[in-house]
Image (cartoon, rainbow, N blue to C red):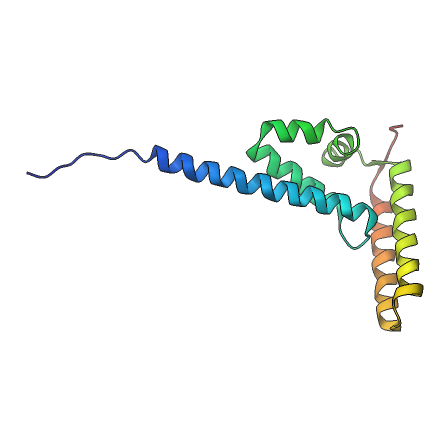
Amino acid sequence: MINCRMTDSRPRKQKINSLFKILLIIAGTISLLLGIIGIFIPLLPTTPLLLLSAWCYLRSSEKLYLWLMQNRIFGRYILNYQEGKGAPLYFKTFTLIILWGTIIYTAFFVLNHSLLRWLLLIIAISVTVHIYLIPTSRDK
């Protein structure tokens, strides 16, 4: 006599889904932390990291996603970027001041190699052009 009992794979799928959600929460949190650091270090791209955080939280934790989107600093910035509304002028100005301040400090006080100085200059110009091309929103 052959036993043809079907097994239910739901508990295993739930474990996989739970593990996947935990990994997404971890990835979203790391991305958020790197995005925050990227505000002060010009070589880390803040916007893509914040958008990645929102994506990870959206697929793993409604609570974390709502917290991020309702955050007074990042929420409106992410939403405006997603909707194509752009960034407020003060935010763009602050970003460019931090960018150029860090680049100039690094180029003149940290680096001794002129090739690296030129590379930093090219990066700063590229990021400046990118920020300039982002529409400026009318938010206060």
